Image 1 (cartoon, rainbow, N blue to C red):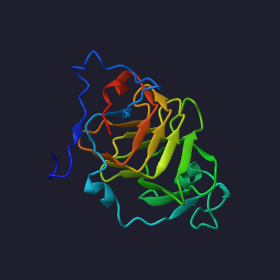
Image 2: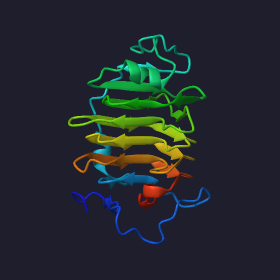
Image 3: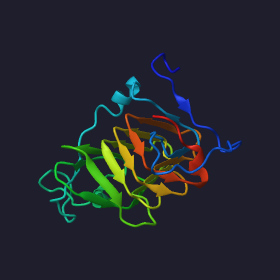
Length: 222
């Protein structure tokens, strides 16, 4: 138990995989987390720390379906149309990207970045898919002091995995949904390989995701 609040599930290491570890089938009725984490924790929704993720967050970049990528993304009136453009224009040392979920439609995304980012859905749930069947929506790298936070977003039908964090010091995924994603290493979410990294996944739903390779060992009940 962690601080008497919840039971944390430590994911198994790569070695000594059980023979029963097989890729998850889409029709599975139980909800599994298709995640591969070198060292990290998957937390259930009762974890109070889930509510404390970056409490001082403010929107500094905006994305909406009615936006334009030639804008600076700095206000609702000058929002960008794509999350890729917002990340490209974000401050390298950290920015808060708010993605509007008030209108129907899917944001198509395929960003590779080393910036520290908080990406949050506002006015409903923003849905994101991948711009290419061979690329994740987000592939983030980092280092000492880096962070990446996802809050309230829905990632769907990515063909090379949805999101990957490599050597990002702090990774928080909160109130997100991963549905129908496929990937060799972490069909929905890949976090690794820095053993000193801090990672927390909470209040999030994983369903119909398929992972093979290293992703086989990253399944746990949410």
